[in-house]
View 1: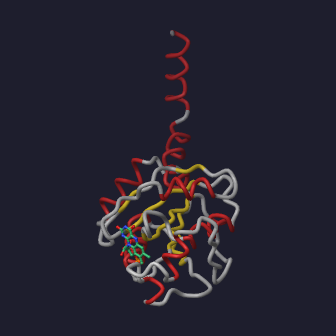
View 2: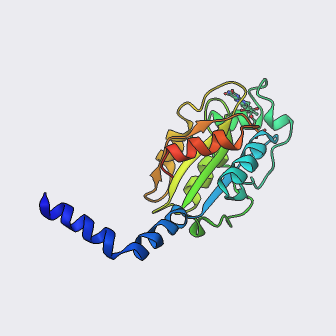
Length: 189
Ligand SMILES: Cc1cc2nc3c(=O)[nH]c(=O)nc-3n(C[C@H](O)[C@H](O)[C@H](O)COP(=O)(O)O)c2cc1C
């Protein structure tokens, strides 16, 4: 006990410059953040933009090779594209590009709309298309009323590489910066 407090005192006295340097390193240690989003009708894009601003993050749009038409999104007709894909676990719509700069970031926030209780299949394609080893990952989503449910857990299972996944959250597209920041800070990200 005596040795312990002696050590602490010695550190405090002998290293003021070092501790100031450690403090100034705190924000940098949080690393760079990328918000990678898919949005078919704009709600998730708004949330992703608000999140990027709130977290001082960069944005990347996940685009399908074949964009979704209005008819593709009509969930009242079970034969339309989005619904057929969601009902098929192995549907993997192709990405328009594979240029997401994942390697340059420490933390990736995935953003997507809820489609039939899950993330759109293009998000499955995305998490399987890059190596997320060593990255921190979380998810945000928008919906017409459903909660995030098991959607982020499902993406976690599919994620390529050993990533550190944190729980995701549903937000309103117009979520305020304070709400987004406090959720993110609680995750320890
Ligand atoms: C094919 C399809 C399925 C959907 N399924 C759900 C659902 O299960 N629960 C829900 O609350 N909203 C559902 N929605 C509504 C969207 O989640 C909501 O409108 C979302 O904000 C759209 O985001 P976006 O504008 O970024 O595409 C669905 C929308 C589509 C097109």
